[in-house]
Length: 451
Image 1 (cartoon, rainbow, N blue to C red):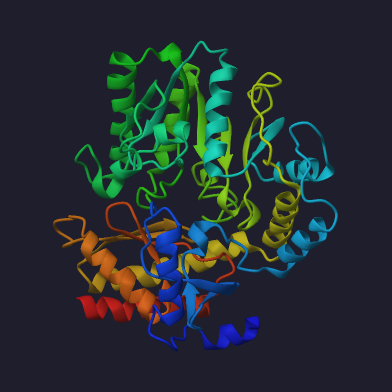
Image 2 (cartoon, rainbow, N blue to C red):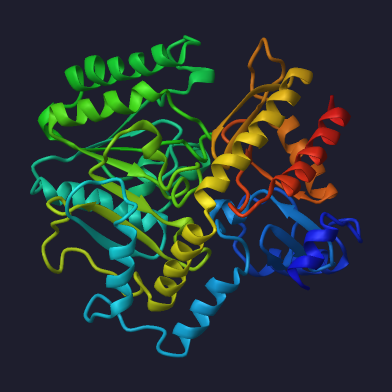
């Protein structure tokens, strides 16, 4: 299956999905795997190239998921594949915990060119985004020599499912049910969600100001001693929470609060990083410099790798205080180096900004026609469509969201949801305007049907 072949023919449904091969595999899956996942539709993938996915029955789909914002440089990118093969022929593992190899140094030096932190920086490699978040939490407490225990997070956040990150995750009760007690010392405050501001205002800037006022006047003045806050951790755009873009003033004011109380500011760029939002990192849209950044997902285009990057003076855990057997695996690092090459040479950050702006424009046109589209929001190719019962009520409509997602699958478009009822769009950054048009045409046909 060549890239040209798929490009010309996709989307193409040859057997009504799920086809017979898919159903047979799903039956075996249900018996062999712990079913703790939430799967939106019965897709069984056979192969994928660039922004097209083929299932085991031969159906071709436009990918508006990118493996949950992971495949930023496209599926089976030939340069990434070559980097993986070349490194696998040299050596596949030799734990960086106890030994050194050049790939780890080269990647750090390359990545530091784009990390929005001034001055000296250091990195710690992990296997995934949740481990990167765990690292930031340990670093923030170690930096304060254990004198500060509290961590402030945000309602609606998703930071992972291991115990430390899960303690800050708060996007759905099912993610936390039965797992308490979790990490002590975690305080959650509202996220400034302009479309549904918890402070009952529809003005985005006022929503941001009132969130900061809640943090300072209620939490820090009445609940948590200011000099015991180790860190504040935030997604610059909430992902699982609903692809929510906060007001611009909010991030700057949050940075000011962190400075005032002497805590570290951690940004979770696991989903937003590596060009997804039309900049290398989403925090750049807000003109704010964090102390620590958690990375994962798109860092190695599907290979298990993550990283915690921070200011040199902050990354100061004592020897033996934090380590990992597989973090910074040489094959994954080689893939990650090639990802940087592709993003640079193919100008994918610019493409994300340009095509994302075009998609948002088309979706806003549709929003004027259909009252169940409450809001279109996003930056770059991280776009959310809020599905509601009516524009006036703004009430979430999860059943309609699921209907739209399943119909999209049947017609050859892969999308999923986020938050209470947000349709999330996060294709590979290689997506073209022409292919994006095909995808939006499918959505428009479905919107007409469900209307």
